[in-house]
Length: 126
Image 1: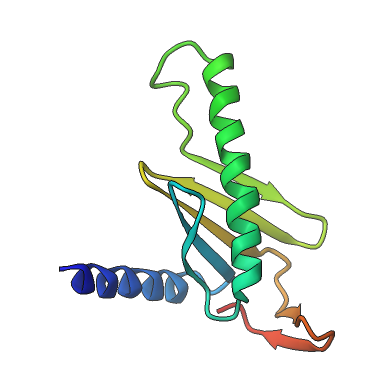
Image 2: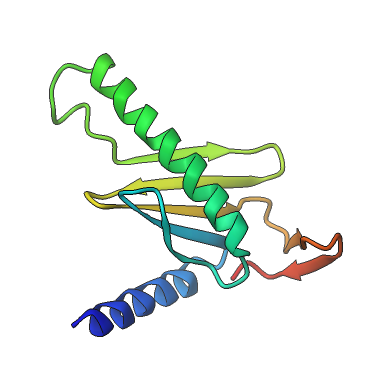
């Protein structure tokens, strides 16, 4: 059963990448803050960094919404979008047990990523 669910998740993520060609990376984080899936071009260390920082950030956003808004339906966090100067946008979508973090290229140009070794690799947004 777990294998069928994994292949279904992989198929959904692959379709998501095909539908949105400006996505340059993603991380799926479980409720413990551990990355369970990440984009093939993203190193594991970077996925762990995104998981640690964004799960903490989302938890703080939920706490702030709970204090600012009165009703339980109003204070439910759906998503958070962060725009950077470099032209990327980090989007966090929350579900009951998982957080999907998506990194999107908003420049309109092909994305150039710097690899860990100092070299550059061009990415076409997938």
